[in-house]
Image 1 (cartoon, rainbow, N blue to C red):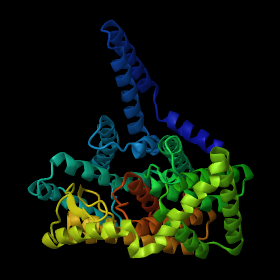
Image 2 (cartoon, rainbow, N blue to C red; image 1 turned 180 degrees about the vertical axis):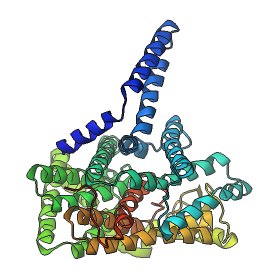
Image 3 (cartoon, rainbow, N blue to C red; image 1 turned 30 degrees about the vertical axis):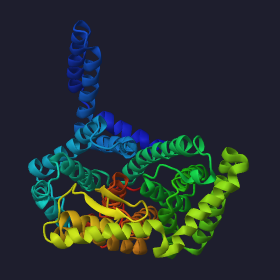
Image 4 (spheres, one colour; image 1 turned 135 degrees about the vertical axis):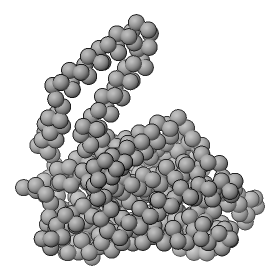
Length: 475
């Protein structure tokens, strides 16, 4: 890993010429002097830092993508209602950089980014997506609400710069390492939030299940990636590091008390057993026992005598999934779905527009709920975009699901097989989880899809002539 980082750093520094560095230093020196003289030092310093980053991003796009991978950690944990100052900054950085790259690559470099029918389906979807703004305005949706949802989902287009630049094994390792920093940031934020919301405020046992229920997809995906890469890694230190990462990710998922994702993780691990050998299956079972033991030890060190009370709460939470239609949340969602189906039947072709809210009666709270959240990702698209546009986007995801399944099954190279199995299981996670929530539209869900799909097509078209799949410059 150190060797890879040194090579990348050397390549990064090699992109800068003496003249460009000299000109930047002159501009920076003059700006600092003016800033001190005019008492605007902080603004000048921010401008210099920002200019330097922008120059580095343009000169070395991989550095831009590595930076995005690290930055997403703060993007995932920002959950304040409305449009905050952070949303504006994140939008300028993430969306601005993405659209600049797309315009430059397609418009000026004339590169062919859309390589198959699924990519073309996504292209058609986004070409007609601006018409959805007109539909939303007609349905009395503020344009800012429409643009916020559109901008959030537009992040799926990060598939193309990642697929274009992150093409070698060393780049993939660095990118995933950078993204793991974001995951760990979200993990520790989850532990901190649980401590603040549940442990410090809990009076009764049932209050221990109070938690911050965001980024469940991210934690589940990180656990899946951690398990797979731990299995196929031989170096003891790296295996231990990956196992520790898996334990933390799984622990964050546990304290979210998201029973749906607990069940989905178990289902995905079961599916994983069909794509690994007998020895790896034994290792998975052994690793699971180790992880559960470590987590129990951590829980006991925190809760002491209340450990078994917490475990009872978790058991009660998990067992409630067996109630089926008798479960309160399920009945509330049936009431929600009824209004969603009405909206789809009223506008089957055009949809109701991004940001459109629904109103339904909560039979348990005995109140009318007005929300823009739909607890089904497929109904979410049908309600907002209509049937034709939804078919395009469904085809896009299903294409890569089957593509990854084939690659995971047939690829022989160790690293690529590890990567493909992981990405395939991420797509399985996304397909299943979208039946219970609109994970296609949540921030962590979007980037989970980006990682899976970007690497799914990375080696396919480049080596179709050789009828084999391999890594470039993988020595």
